[in-house]
Image (tube, rainbow, N blue to C red; front, side):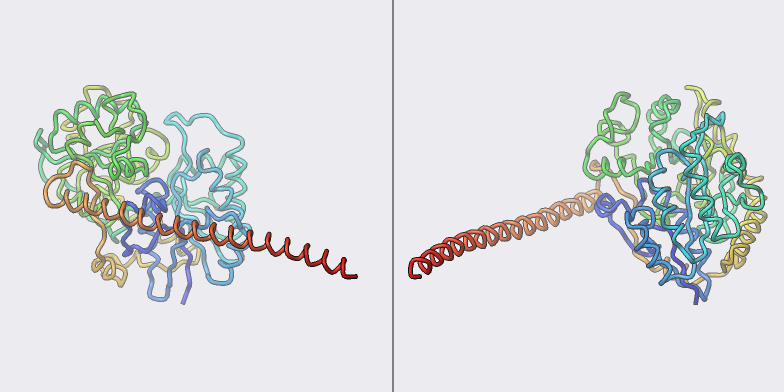
Length: 457
């Protein structure tokens, strides 16, 4: 039996409610992280493998030495799926992860890591480069190679001195989340104003504001699928994600997509993909929001806004446009017409072979080659009761009332727990006060006793 520690938030069949996600941040700020973590979990679920998710502790622990000692004692391999980890914002986590890896004696395999730059490549960051070099060096001392998302990341690592023998371009493992992916085909040659459309935009990409505004008005069956923790907080508790400087940016509770309950937040990869199977078209700038649509077999157009999204689109042949190619007149019907998955479908076998070769090169057994087989993983996942997509506070009908009741129960549970903690604290303070008073009285008595003894002497 091979014991594998996997950088992942949870067991794939483990349900986590929206309030609990907000408390513990099991999505590591973005629900897209769930897709590639679960994908790697499945592909490594060979009969002789035992997999334990690290629940992101490996890059959150401050005591790297103790954590690494536990890994060395308990596991045979540490597998690290990563997304766009080579970026300034992830540097503190990357440094902590490097400290852990440096102390490991077990093999380490990094899967799907990417760098993040602007569409034109952007300027280099010397401090980030040093952190990436340190991480890569630590990993390569314990692995045959590092698997990266695309050619742009490979080029970035090449500039830091890491050659083709150390870096393998493997894309994102999330396309194999359900095994061999189903072909993506158009069910109809065109869509209409009444078509069901899912939009997966990044609110910070200003170029998309006018597109969000026009599509919110024109397509009444359009649903926005946000992915960030701040979005989830907005949907669950009705707090604005940010100060709404632009009323058409869906980051506030007065936005029509919120007030009309046309937002849904994914808490689990399986239910996310299942939800999208009923749609006619998916478009937007979120790479894993796009891959969720692809896994559902729905024609999907990615709007690439930086290198991390563009290199994956290029490697997997995902239909895409750069945001610099868009205008305020860009329309979903036009995007749908340009969506062609013939090249993507044709590339899947080769991409699967490359990924399988990478895993084997790094000493990992896998089930990628078993394209049509139903694994024990699949059976357990199918039987799991997992949370549905999260609604807004404006949700109607039975589902809406159930969601509101669930949130009320959560508030009551938290209030009860808080009251119990306060009561315990008050008792502790009271006990402490009593003990302090007792010590004071005892000290006074002892002093008096000593004086009396002294007088007697």
